[in-house]
Length: 302
Image (cartoon, rainbow, N blue to C red; front, side, top):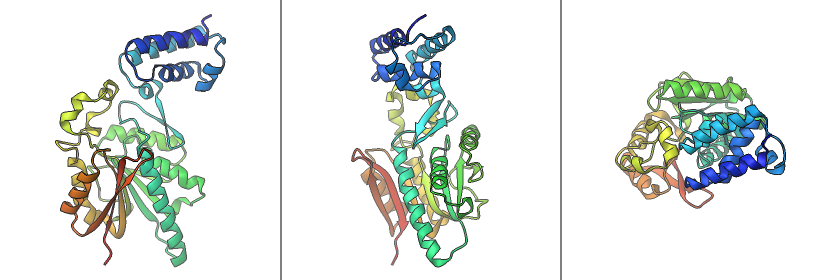
């Protein structure tokens, strides 16, 4: 029987020869998935024998990766904000950068719940995840609120997407994480008429922001993902601009929007917000790498 070390060496050599940036990590993840163990188990037990079926699964997965398919699609899962989401070609693979949006939204929700408790407000806080894709932001938020023992009826979360297929995947993820009672779903282009009785208190969005002329130069794995979830128009801000136009009607008077942007779009989103939302406050939050990542918009309070 072939050992884990032999298969790891084979996979690493093959992916390295093809020029992959992370050949060892990719191979470890694929082999662990084929065997059905954690990644560190294949690293720690190099002499362990690998069954025939698991070896065949690994080789098939390695072929897919060698052809450029993302590891997340090959495995069918992607870790995000402490949870594992099912992923496939119906939606964009959640990126680590988007976890920053979840953190900001979660902090906003908790601050507002604390303030509401002091006033005795009974209406639920309304949050919408626009362009939800796999459901990453909405589901990560719902799981985090459940972990903090926030009752489901205190925060109403809606996830919307223009893609019916993506919404089906998001629903599957919500059920898989037992938060189907905390998230509702709607097919819509940006902000829909809300069954939660909008406008919303908080808008979160990870919308397409890649410039159209940059699409062809994206890494090969990206070509497996839905182009509609990446292409943001000539300047990368076309879809974000349409959402900005919808915010005056879509947000409550004290509402806030948290929009993911490209690392080179900090100045551009500030200029666009000044043009589309005169009088509103807009700031850009940086991620852990110090790069512009999230635009935070609020109506200015006189």
